[in-house]
Image (cartoon, rainbow, N blue to C red; front, side, top):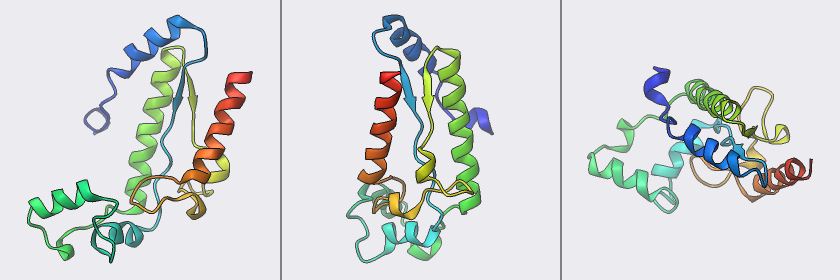
Length: 145
């Protein structure tokens, strides 16, 4: 399954080319962890503000002719496992190509791996600007070292 899930084969070549320039370190920023609350994610698609932030996915759901009750959010555990697969791939590819991998800031992640609510954007997947500010501070630390 892992081979078909991640499609990062071109990343290594890009990282290798960037690493040759050596002016600044090449940094691969890992995506934020998944959100735990599946119902909150579901509300992004079928709640009172459905479609305002998730227009792309709402259009796909509509084009498929699916009713809200027919659409299931993948379980939190499965979303976390899939995210870990992607994180591992980003880290491995970065290491193999001389880049630095920057995982999500520990302060933003629950002990069991999910994104802390206070760093969650108002959509199904993204982190918010508070998360971004912490991430930028971590990036600046890496560049200074």
